[in-house]
Image 1 (cartoon, rainbow, N blue to C red):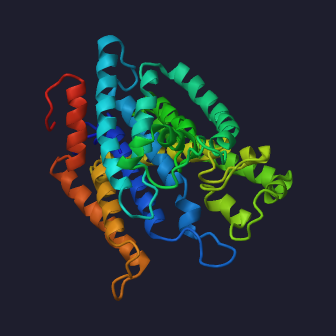
Image 2: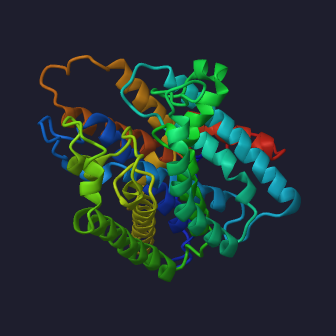
Length: 413
């Protein structure tokens, strides 16, 4: 949820793709916002003994949040030199700006963490990811590719080895919050950092893979049609292969049977969890946990699948933006408007969910209706701000902080 990546799409010569590139990224971010809202407001499992996955869980769980994280890396690449990584004083200024933007996001996240809400708020983890990626901002695309590949392969193994130690029953190693990070948790920094990096809902150790992959994508020549097609087609192929390999190892090679011995509680059917969400499940005692491609498992196959889906979505949005340029139509306006102010809209959404948490639905309303109302409101607000070339309120604050870090005059562009 970075500051907006583009102004409104002024007409450019067809074929330049300049606005297409930026509005396509914003549109993908808008899709991610709507997907996360869907997982917050609509059930991902049916209310039956088997916890049958719903289409919302199958479609969006794990993928929407990962898309946000990949787009964060893309946004950082676009804001720090696009295909040319910053160097020298420019690099130092960029890092200061990113760090102050992360501080704004963290403050908002800690505030939301204090609300009574059944939503896994991503913002504090998101801010920490911004800080963790700072050392890599100045790298070119080749070292970034190598680093991203190594992180995708190695971080799940390291997390698997460290989690049992961090979750040991004896103090002081009980490094799991069990709730969203909030201001009170700053008094126990060890526990807070253990949760953020390894034991929480969005473990930064593995999730840094998404930002590194996003940096790689952002360093590509995204204005070229061939690159956009490659993202769409290549992302789709890798996503399918990762899921296929995970299913093969679980169903055909005995992984699922081995894991059932470690998940004997009938309240948590393994088949359903592997399809929708492994967050909160203690993935220890068997190396087969690393063979899963389940959403929120943080395994290599999960990281590959979700980041590949993100790449395909970005490619599709860039191509749709190019088509709109060719037709002289702003096809992406509904999505790019919401995507340009996701920090404000996400914050408003979480506050609204908190205000209605454990309250009965209004007469005549369904959960689907509530989601449709919130999604439409986000699209209308975002579209209005985009049409007026305005930043969202929290985006304005984050942008101003970034400008201060870069030693430039803060203000609205």
